[in-house]
Image (cartoon, rainbow over all chains, first blue to last red; front, side):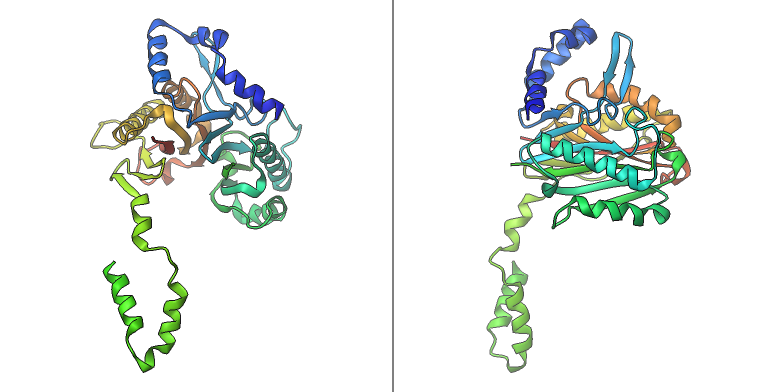
Amino acid sequence: MNRRNLLKSLTLLPLAGAASITLSPTDAQAQKRQKGQWTPKKQVVRKSNSGGNTNTAVPSLKGPPVAILSGCIRSGHLLFVSGIGGWYPERRAEPGDIKVQIKGILDTLKEVLEGAGSSMANALKVHMTVVEPNKNIADLNEVYRDYFPDPAPVRSYTGSSAELMGRDGVLVQLDCIAYVD
Amino acid sequence: MNRLEILTGLTQLPLAGAVVSATAFDAVSVPVAVDEWLPKKQLIRGANSSCLRSGHLLFVGGIGGWYANRRPEPGDAKVQITSALNTMKEALEAAGSGMHNVLQIFMTVAEPKKNLARLNEGYHEFFPENPPVRSFSSSKASQMGRDGILVQVGCIAYVD
């Protein structure tokens, strides 16, 4: 809760330091225009889901790397959560098997949703990308089903292969839309 | 509505054999009329960047990174994401919203290890501030539906 308020207040700060890094005069104009269009119906509740790891950054010519996605966004009574990967080397030495990875993801998801004032019980829709689902989905489900009280969220997934996951070692990525009061 | 009237009419017929079907009608006769729902789903735009509105949400269907009738060469991932997001921008603005209101992005990326970094370079220019949440599935170049396509991207956005 404290953290949430902190993040909230951070997004409201005039971003003195952060803004100056990337601003050229034309950028400033563009940003001003964007601020005018800004609507409170979109609010970043969380900048990153796992210590910056899911917050993919791109190098910027004008300063430090720029984050290109948010961790969790609220709009009205909905929360949108970014894809959470099954393994981040910064968090765990070994990638582990599918059970370890889905557990890591769902623990993170729980933390994100609760931090935003919701809970796993309010998860509406889950989408996953799963490596070799024929091999992994049964084990994944074993861990998965304990995380959501009835009724479980709707779910869909896309199958993939290990070398297509963007990073070595990752077996699953999961994102979610949830209700929040 | 016509259908509803016919159905209601049918249940009122004094048909001896209709007892069975009448119970079936009872089961579906919930007090929510069909046409109360329909306006909540509105087609804003079809084809290539289909866009539906429901309440304060816009759903934009997958936009491909390359359409042969628009650009002679497929180009790399940066070219393709820029083109797709420009189309998305157009669709959202036509619907009364804009890129600053994008809540969630979903992409399918061909060979992400090769293409994702380049894609991100083009991507972040569209979302300089408060970027949307994002997730992606990956595929092989040969599984993208058409040759040459490296990315397909869709979104959910807020609209006033």
